Image (cartoon, rainbow, N blue to C red; front, side, top):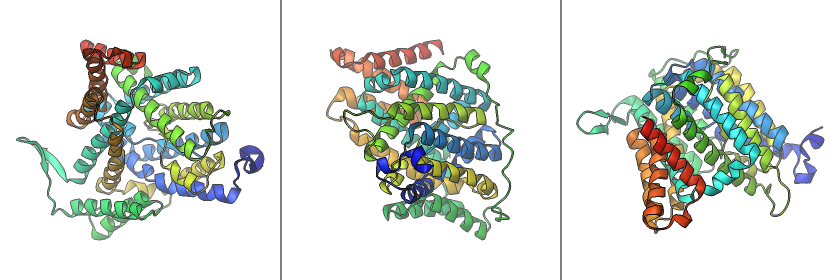
Length: 429
């Protein structure tokens, strides 16, 4: 049955290798079941329901990827997109989380149309590499600020806007310890380093009495009713959500497409001049976004951590199937997820942020018309506490710089369209 479903021999693999690859990828991305509820709960969403929604959306996304595309890619609610949902759309812009879910749904529909029509490929080709890299790095800086604030390392200050927190605080010290546990374990190539770091600080915090004692680990899953089908699509269409939806679509396009292509190339799933299943994979992650918004979580996307499973030998959708099954099993560990404190997940955010900032090396720093828009993109995000503003400043400045220096031939129509849409948004504000 497995052979007929996943063509194991054709991909030079076997069931044992695929299972090992699935477990490997799951361990590297399982931290999301603790981090995502912590982030989305800041909007007023029920933490238990978000935990269930996270597990279900991840499992569903993995199953779609497994059976539709037969690729070894793990899917789950994405980092960066959840931060924009919680701290940007709801926190800074003042929309309800129901409206934010509606925006995710609409962006998923647009994403699906882009993928099915081939426009997604056109859009990717039209966005300059420097801006794509800067967007990833800027989101990393934004996550870093959120992480430092959650850990208590950075606090608000009326005179200087921000300043250093109390480094003698036990919870701050625990957060710092958690970061170094994750960094050292990952440097030593230990699978599940981020997950181990979160759990280690959670357990240590409970033992020391800084968080509620661990009274249980396994139970029946909480109800998903508080978030299930609670999206407000009408509210999105009536409240000028152009900016929000545009950012969701752009980040989804860059993040998911880049991850899918990168991991697929590493697994030799995109042979030159031969048919491949990239189209199906793109359709799979688009479908997962729609499903996640209905269940009650931010955008579901392909995880770059899938590369760990590919490194372990994963070559087919059986790897994704194993990941999905493991996410379903996580539903029964809700008690553990409910006691994870913010300062235990903050180190994971900070570490992921550091990995994302590395993309700045792909910016063409020798070309001012590339470097300045990229710099603005990355800088504006944390300083305005908005991923949307960073992307807007980046695209507008890119078009202005190219036009102002007489290099309009280097402008792709996709970049111009995105910049114009952001200008219209600023005018309508």
